[in-house]
Length: 335
Image (tube, rainbow, N blue to C red; front, side, top):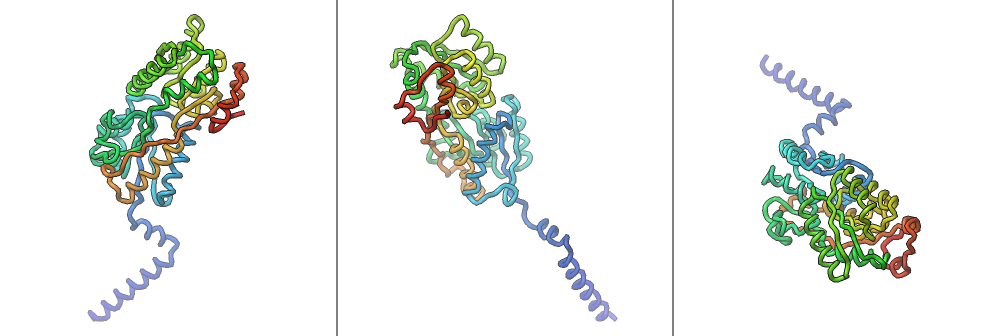
């Protein structure tokens, strides 16, 4: 009797296993037993607009080059602060509670510090427009230490941007420098660099602070009574790119911008780090960490690729002719 009962149990087990294997639901069961794919937490201080979409494509490209494809072997959870820096801490805390594998904190040092304050164990990959060692984010570029590494855009471009602006508009003497006080570290460094370069070039500098759309409008309105010869826009959130570019054209004021996003929106010229290349490098760093690299030992990537982009159509509206030498120097001239 006991033998027959044992045989029946074995037979039931075999039949049940065969039925499950032939069932269309069997792959779902098998997948459910596999380890869950890692999740990347993406912390961004801005909004998910067209400029962000371009950079995200570059980020995903870097991931692919490292062997990771979203939806196949890695997932991404996005947290957008919508230009409200005070939200970054709570958004970072949410990613920590979610127990993501890596946090990508981009858009300057503020998101990086917000993420750093919330976790000392989850790897963080940042972007920084100022030296992350001086900012206190990492111990050194070669060996960052702790749980942070990232991509750094060297700041030498401020003086070069002024030089290129004067090549396009040789008559300039007074330059307004528009800074975003919400990004205090970048604003202070940019103004210092601009003042140093201006003294060498015999230019007068006037600093303007503007963060919100209303403040940007007010700054341009002030040009009616105190008009500069040109405008130098410091590191600014790219969601302001259309407003800043259009106001420059409306006021017929030559302006130089930090990234090509502004030129694509109608701005006159830009010279700065290639943000697409920066995001590709961020994606590659994240891929290395997912494969086991420790951020403490993963060198900060120092970006050396800068690009000069000129909008010839905007130059024409402003009554400017782009010199042949400057055209030849430009990485791209938008006609």
